[in-house]
Length: 269
Image 1: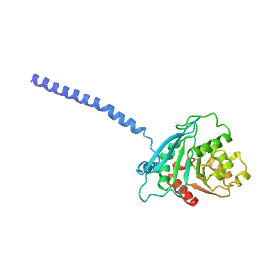
Image 2 (image 1 turned 90 degrees about the horizontal axis):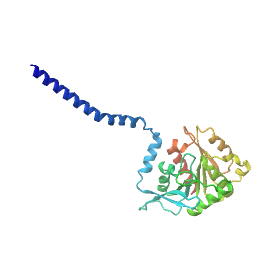
Image 3 (image 1 turned 120 degrees about the vertical axis):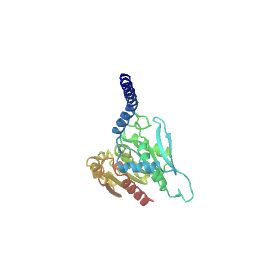
Image 4 (image 1 turned 180 degrees about the horizontal axis):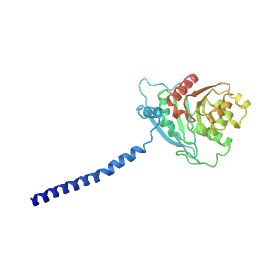
């Protein structure tokens, strides 16, 4: 009787040790899974869907490279595979994208903008401005004149002839002086709540003849409305307000942004 009791206790003890050992092996994996999921910050559904569209486009390849020196400027360009029935290049528009302070040319790739424009028959290029993304900082671009000359060099190196210039937020330091100095070299201008608009007069804006699409978010009551006061003085301008969007309205409402942009490009053809 005593031996049976001892044997039973030994069996229970061994089972207990085995269960403890199995739980010890599984616990780190369970904890890791919980930790990972708790720090998975979701993107907005609209942006997530738009990024999937851009990534799933098998007809478009994103070419990367550099132009200029001091600094060497990084760029991305969408290249559409030539297939039967693809849009021709005879009447295509050339579009160059500048970015805001918290972003880079990669933003326009991830949003699917470059691929979308390429598939729509346009040439789409985005650059990293000096000090952002893959482009090193430069100490030679402190004046408005130097930044205008910088864009002229970029257009020349990328062989952009009368492009449409899309400029958001911080990049207004480059685009607004260029628009006022050489607006005739642009096919169109798409400012998205750019900085630097207050540095110029109403009379200067009224002399611009470049077709302009002003885009800003409904909730961008600071820079969006501030830039609008100046930009709406451009004679050939019209305004698109993206409902429910903030300062980076193209991220908040990518579908609406792309629709407005493509409609504008269609009018320029």
